[in-house]
Amino acid sequence: MTRRTMKAIRLHEFGGPGVLRYEDVPVPVPAPGEVLVRVKAVGLNPPDWYVREGMPGVPDEFKPPFDLPLIPGTDISGVVEAVSDDVQGFAPGDEVVGLLRFPDEMQSGAYAEYVAAPASDLAPKPATVDHVQAAALPMSGLTAWQYLIDVGHEHPSPFQAARHQPVPLNDGMTVLVNGAGGGVGHLAVQLAAWKGARVIAVASGAHEQFLRDLGADEYIDYTKQRPEEVVRDVDVVLDAVGGPASRRFLPVVKCGGALYPVYVGEFDEEENAKLGITVTGTQVRANGTQLAELAALVDAGTLRVAVDSTYPLAHAQAAHERAAKGHLQGKIVLTVD
Image (cartoon, rainbow, N blue to C red; front, side, top):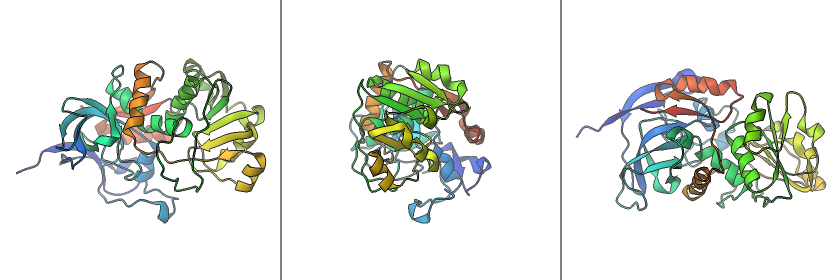
C-alpha cells in the first residue's frame, strides 16, 4: 500500500537558511504512546538554527546524533488526527499543543503538515488563542516555568553538576529578566509578576511599552544603561540571553540570591560561594502536565503570548533569516495550511 505524503522542511546537509528544503515526504505513523497531529502552526526556537548549522562550537560529547535528512522543529499546535490504541486522554479532533521529545531528540519533525507526537508531551491547546499564538508557547513557556516556578524533572543539566531548584517567588522579591523582549523573556516577566514579584525588564528601547504592558515595574534599555551598573539587591536574575557574559550580573544579585543563565555561562564556583549567590541552570524538557498549566494561565488572561512574525511553512528559510537578525519581540511562527 502506498503511504500518504505531506509537505515538510528537511535538512540534507548543515549550513545556513538555504539548506532548508520544502519537499514531499511520507506522513509519519504514530508508534505506541503517540498520536498523529495535523500541524497548524510551528514555533521556532534557537535549537532549530543550532541544529541547522550542525551545532558548531559544541563539543562532540555534548552533540546528540543527527541522521540526515531530518525534519527540524519541536513546537507545534494542531489537531489530533489519529491516536495509537494505548493512548488515553486524546481523541481525533482535539486541539493540542506540545514541545515534542525535547531534549532527547533535539529536532522532532515539527516543520511538516503532520507529526507523530508522544501523548505525554501534549496538552490541550489554550481555547482563547489561535494556533499561531499557541505554537509560540511550548518551549519558551516551559523554559520560563522550569527556571522560575518548578523544574518538574530530576534530569541533571549536561553543563552543571548542581541541581537547579527555583527560589519560591513572592511579593517581597525583585526579579530582573535580561532579554525580556524575546520568547522566554516576555513569558518570564509575566510569570514573575503573577507570583507578585517586582519585575525589572532589560531589553532594547523598542520593547519598553510592550514589556510594561506585560507587567514590568521597571525598564532598562541596555543600549543606554548597563544594568550591572545601576541595579543592586535583586533576589533573582533570569538571564534569557546567557552565555559567557552572564557573569556580569553577579553584582546585581544580593547575598543569598540567585542567578539563572538560560544558556550556559562561565562562572567561578568559589567566587559565587564567596558572594553567597546561587548560580544554576537546567535544560528544558518536554512536559505535557506543565504545559497544561501554562495553557490555563493563557486562558485565564494571566499570560499573553507574543508573536514577532509569521511565515508560511514553505518560507522557513525567510523565517530563519528573520531569526538571525535578532531583536525579536516574542516568537517567530510558521503557519501550515
